View 1: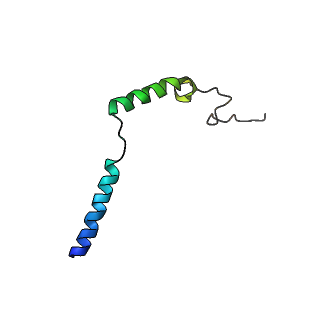
View 2 (view 1 turned 135 degrees about the vertical axis):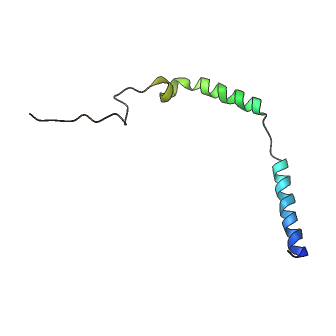
View 3 (view 1 turned 60 degrees about the vertical axis):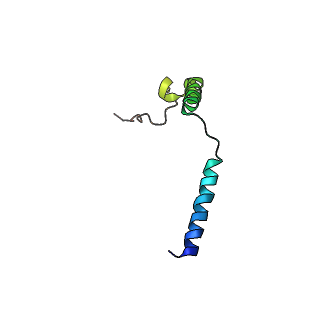
Length: 68
């Protein structure tokens, strides 16, 4: 790598580090608490927790029509 290419590469690294340093961070404990609160608030609308009525379930087995 030539000297000028090395300088360009280092400038890109510094620019990326400055960008990452400017990002606002959230503590993991706060993010976990927010996620838990969101899950508890939306638990009533979650079909994985509450189940789904068979009439609204698009994945229910289709009824077989048979003629005698």
